[in-house]
Amino acid sequence: MRINTRYLRQIEVIGKENQFKLLNSSALVIGAGGLGSAAIAYLAGAGVGRIGIADGDVVEVHNLDRQFIHAGKTGMNKAESARMFVESLNPDVEVRTYANFSKESAYMVKKYDVVVSCVDSLEARHEINEVCFKLKKPLVHAAISGFDGELMVFDFRSKDTPCYSCIYPRACRAKFNPVVAPVAGIAGSMQALETIKLLCGYGVTRDLLRMDFRHMEFFRISVSKRKDCPVCSTP
Ligand SMILES: [Zn+2]
Image 1 (tube, helix red, strand yellow):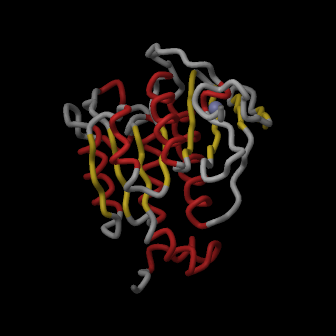
Image 2 (cartoon, helix red, strand yellow):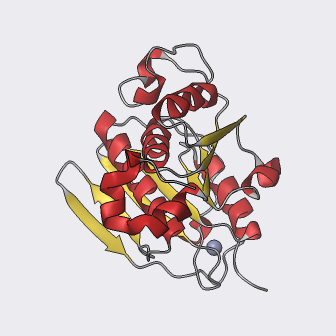
Protein backbone atom coordinates (compact mmCIF):
# COMPACT_ATOMS: atom_id res chain seq x y z
CA MET A 1 0.00 0.00 0.00
CA ARG A 2 1.35 3.40 -0.99
CA ILE A 3 0.85 6.31 1.39
CA ASN A 4 -0.22 9.41 -0.48
CA THR A 5 1.05 12.89 0.27
CA ARG A 6 -1.94 13.82 2.43
CA TYR A 7 -0.16 12.52 5.57
CA LEU A 8 3.21 14.18 4.86
CA ARG A 9 3.23 16.53 7.87
CA GLN A 10 2.03 13.82 10.25
CA ILE A 11 4.52 11.22 9.00
CA GLU A 12 7.36 13.62 9.83
CA VAL A 13 6.31 13.15 13.48
CA ILE A 14 4.96 9.61 13.79
CA GLY A 15 6.82 7.87 10.94
CA LYS A 16 5.59 5.75 8.02
CA GLU A 17 5.18 2.61 10.10
CA ASN A 18 2.71 4.31 12.44
CA GLN A 19 0.87 5.85 9.50
CA PHE A 20 0.39 2.33 8.10
CA LYS A 21 -0.87 1.25 11.52
CA LEU A 22 -3.48 4.02 11.49
CA LEU A 23 -4.62 3.16 7.97
CA ASN A 24 -5.09 -0.45 9.10
CA SER A 25 -6.86 0.52 12.34
CA SER A 26 -10.47 1.12 13.23
CA ALA A 27 -12.39 3.30 15.69
CA LEU A 28 -16.05 3.40 16.67
CA VAL A 29 -17.23 6.91 17.51
CA ILE A 30 -20.46 6.87 19.51
CA GLY A 31 -22.21 10.21 19.20
CA ALA A 32 -21.70 12.61 16.29
CA GLY A 33 -22.51 15.78 18.24
CA GLY A 34 -20.09 18.40 19.60
CA LEU A 35 -17.37 16.03 20.83
CA GLY A 36 -17.96 13.62 17.94
CA SER A 37 -17.67 16.29 15.25
CA ALA A 38 -14.12 17.16 16.29
CA ALA A 39 -13.13 13.55 17.04
CA ILE A 40 -14.47 12.25 13.71
CA ALA A 41 -12.89 15.08 11.70
CA TYR A 42 -9.40 14.52 13.16
CA LEU A 43 -9.54 10.72 13.12
CA ALA A 44 -10.56 10.84 9.45
CA GLY A 45 -8.01 13.50 8.56
CA ALA A 46 -5.24 11.53 10.29
CA GLY A 47 -6.11 8.45 8.24
CA VAL A 48 -7.69 6.01 10.68
CA GLY A 49 -8.70 3.52 8.01
CA ARG A 50 -12.10 2.40 9.25
CA ILE A 51 -14.45 4.58 11.28
CA GLY A 52 -17.83 3.53 12.65
CA ILE A 53 -20.26 6.32 13.56
CA ALA A 54 -23.29 5.71 15.78
CA ASP A 55 -25.96 8.39 16.20
CA GLY A 56 -29.72 8.29 15.76
CA ASP A 57 -30.39 12.05 16.06
CA VAL A 58 -30.98 14.54 13.28
CA VAL A 59 -29.06 17.77 12.71
CA GLU A 60 -30.75 20.88 14.12
CA VAL A 61 -29.77 24.53 13.64
CA HIS A 62 -28.82 24.94 17.33
CA ASN A 63 -26.21 22.15 16.91
CA LEU A 64 -24.18 24.00 14.31
CA ASP A 65 -22.18 26.33 16.60
CA ARG A 66 -20.05 23.33 17.54
CA GLN A 67 -21.10 20.47 15.23
CA PHE A 68 -19.40 21.92 12.16
CA ILE A 69 -19.21 18.67 10.19
CA HIS A 70 -23.00 18.90 9.73
CA ALA A 71 -22.95 22.33 8.05
CA GLY A 72 -25.74 22.62 5.46
CA LYS A 73 -27.33 19.30 6.46
CA THR A 74 -30.11 20.36 8.85
CA GLY A 75 -32.74 17.61 9.17
CA MET A 76 -30.36 14.80 8.12
CA ASN A 77 -29.38 11.91 10.41
CA LYS A 78 -26.12 12.86 12.15
CA ALA A 79 -24.32 9.58 11.46
CA GLU A 80 -25.20 9.85 7.76
CA SER A 81 -24.16 13.52 7.66
CA ALA A 82 -20.85 12.63 9.38
CA ARG A 83 -20.27 9.86 6.81
CA MET A 84 -20.67 12.41 3.99
CA PHE A 85 -18.18 14.73 5.72
CA VAL A 86 -15.58 11.98 6.14
CA GLU A 87 -15.94 10.78 2.55
CA SER A 88 -15.40 14.30 1.25
CA LEU A 89 -12.41 14.90 3.58
CA ASN A 90 -10.51 11.64 3.08
CA PRO A 91 -11.40 8.92 0.57
CA ASP A 92 -8.89 6.56 2.26
CA VAL A 93 -11.35 6.11 5.15
CA GLU A 94 -14.11 3.49 5.09
CA VAL A 95 -17.18 4.54 7.07
CA ARG A 96 -20.03 2.52 8.55
CA THR A 97 -22.99 4.14 10.26
CA TYR A 98 -25.19 2.82 13.06
CA ALA A 99 -28.28 3.92 14.97
CA ASN A 100 -28.01 4.85 18.64
CA PHE A 101 -25.86 2.75 20.97
CA SER A 102 -27.51 0.44 23.50
CA LYS A 103 -26.40 -2.44 25.71
CA GLU A 104 -27.25 -4.72 22.79
CA SER A 105 -24.63 -3.00 20.66
CA ALA A 106 -21.75 -5.33 21.56
CA TYR A 107 -21.80 -6.63 17.97
CA MET A 108 -20.65 -3.23 16.68
CA VAL A 109 -18.01 -2.69 19.39
CA LYS A 110 -16.44 -6.07 18.52
CA LYS A 111 -15.65 -4.85 15.00
CA TYR A 112 -13.38 -1.99 16.11
CA ASP A 113 -9.97 -1.55 17.78
CA VAL A 114 -11.07 1.30 20.04
CA VAL A 115 -14.30 3.02 21.14
CA VAL A 116 -14.55 6.81 21.38
CA SER A 117 -17.41 7.87 23.66
CA CYS A 118 -18.84 11.22 22.56
CA VAL A 119 -22.29 10.95 24.11
CA ASP A 120 -23.93 13.52 26.37
CA SER A 121 -25.85 11.40 28.88
CA LEU A 122 -24.63 9.57 31.97
CA GLU A 123 -26.78 6.58 31.15
CA ALA A 124 -25.20 6.14 27.73
CA ARG A 125 -21.70 6.52 29.22
CA HIS A 126 -22.41 3.74 31.71
CA GLU A 127 -23.77 1.46 28.97
CA ILE A 128 -20.71 2.05 26.78
CA ASN A 129 -18.42 1.48 29.78
CA GLU A 130 -20.06 -1.87 30.59
CA VAL A 131 -19.87 -3.17 27.02
CA CYS A 132 -16.25 -2.04 26.55
CA PHE A 133 -15.21 -3.57 29.89
CA LYS A 134 -16.83 -6.91 29.00
CA LEU A 135 -15.14 -7.00 25.60
CA LYS A 136 -11.79 -5.62 26.92
CA LYS A 137 -11.99 -2.85 24.33
CA PRO A 138 -10.08 0.41 24.98
CA LEU A 139 -12.45 3.32 25.65
CA VAL A 140 -11.61 7.00 25.13
CA HIS A 141 -14.03 9.03 27.24
CA ALA A 142 -14.71 12.76 27.33
CA ALA A 143 -17.46 14.92 28.77
CA ILE A 144 -18.13 18.65 28.62
CA SER A 145 -20.28 21.20 30.41
CA GLY A 146 -20.15 24.98 30.32
CA PHE A 147 -16.45 25.95 30.23
CA ASP A 148 -15.35 22.58 31.66
CA GLY A 149 -14.22 19.31 30.18
CA GLU A 150 -12.79 15.98 31.24
CA LEU A 151 -10.90 13.24 29.45
CA MET A 152 -9.86 9.73 30.37
CA VAL A 153 -8.66 6.65 28.50
CA PHE A 154 -9.83 3.33 29.96
CA ASP A 155 -7.56 0.69 28.48
CA PHE A 156 -9.44 -2.44 29.50
CA ARG A 157 -6.73 -4.66 27.97
CA SER A 158 -4.90 -4.00 31.25
CA LYS A 159 -6.39 -5.77 34.31
CA ASP A 160 -5.80 -2.99 36.84
CA THR A 161 -7.51 -0.25 34.78
CA PRO A 162 -10.41 1.41 36.62
CA CYS A 163 -13.69 1.92 34.74
CA TYR A 164 -16.11 4.82 34.35
CA SER A 165 -18.31 3.35 37.08
CA CYS A 166 -15.35 3.37 39.53
CA ILE A 167 -15.34 7.18 39.18
CA TYR A 168 -19.04 7.95 38.84
CA PRO A 169 -21.74 5.90 40.54
CA ARG A 170 -24.49 4.66 38.28
CA ALA A 171 -27.13 7.35 37.71
CA CYS A 172 -29.68 6.75 35.01
CA ARG A 173 -30.69 10.20 33.98
CA ALA A 174 -30.27 12.06 30.73
CA LYS A 175 -28.83 15.52 31.13
CA PHE A 176 -28.81 18.46 28.78
CA ASN A 177 -25.40 20.07 29.03
CA PRO A 178 -25.06 23.68 27.94
CA VAL A 179 -21.56 24.29 26.58
CA VAL A 180 -19.42 27.02 25.04
CA ALA A 181 -18.84 25.77 21.48
CA PRO A 182 -15.00 25.57 21.34
CA VAL A 183 -14.95 23.51 24.57
CA ALA A 184 -16.58 20.68 22.58
CA GLY A 185 -13.97 21.07 19.83
CA ILE A 186 -11.03 21.02 22.25
CA ALA A 187 -12.21 17.95 24.17
CA GLY A 188 -13.21 16.08 20.99
CA SER A 189 -9.82 16.86 19.41
CA MET A 190 -8.10 15.52 22.54
CA GLN A 191 -10.10 12.31 22.18
CA ALA A 192 -8.90 11.97 18.58
CA LEU A 193 -5.30 12.57 19.69
CA GLU A 194 -5.45 9.98 22.49
CA THR A 195 -7.06 7.51 20.07
CA ILE A 196 -4.30 8.04 17.50
CA LYS A 197 -1.62 7.58 20.20
CA LEU A 198 -3.34 4.43 21.42
CA LEU A 199 -3.61 2.96 17.91
CA CYS A 200 0.05 3.74 17.18
CA GLY A 201 1.19 2.18 20.46
CA TYR A 202 2.35 5.38 22.16
CA GLY A 203 1.60 5.54 25.87
CA VAL A 204 -1.57 7.36 26.87
CA THR A 205 -2.42 9.02 30.17
CA ARG A 206 -3.96 6.73 32.78
CA ASP A 207 -5.15 9.70 34.85
CA LEU A 208 -8.46 11.51 34.75
CA LEU A 209 -7.79 14.92 33.20
CA ARG A 210 -10.11 17.70 34.38
CA MET A 211 -9.98 20.94 32.41
CA ASP A 212 -11.30 24.35 33.45
CA PHE A 213 -11.14 26.37 30.23
CA ARG A 214 -12.63 29.47 31.87
CA HIS A 215 -9.39 29.89 33.85
CA MET A 216 -7.19 27.61 31.71
CA GLU A 217 -6.44 25.30 34.60
CA PHE A 218 -5.79 21.60 34.08
CA PHE A 219 -5.80 18.91 36.75
CA ARG A 220 -4.53 15.33 36.53
CA ILE A 221 -6.30 13.06 39.00
CA SER A 222 -4.99 9.59 39.72
CA VAL A 223 -7.91 7.13 39.76
CA SER A 224 -7.84 3.59 41.15
CA LYS A 225 -10.09 0.62 40.59
CA ARG A 226 -12.91 0.62 43.18
CA LYS A 227 -13.13 -2.66 45.08
CA ASP A 228 -16.93 -2.57 45.21
CA CYS A 229 -17.41 -1.38 41.61
CA PRO A 230 -20.49 -3.20 40.22
CA VAL A 231 -18.92 -3.33 36.74
CA CYS A 232 -15.22 -4.15 37.03
CA SER A 233 -14.61 -5.56 40.52
CA THR A 234 -13.84 -9.28 40.62
CA PRO A 235 -15.88 -11.29 43.17
ZN1 LIG B 1 -15.12 -0.10 37.82
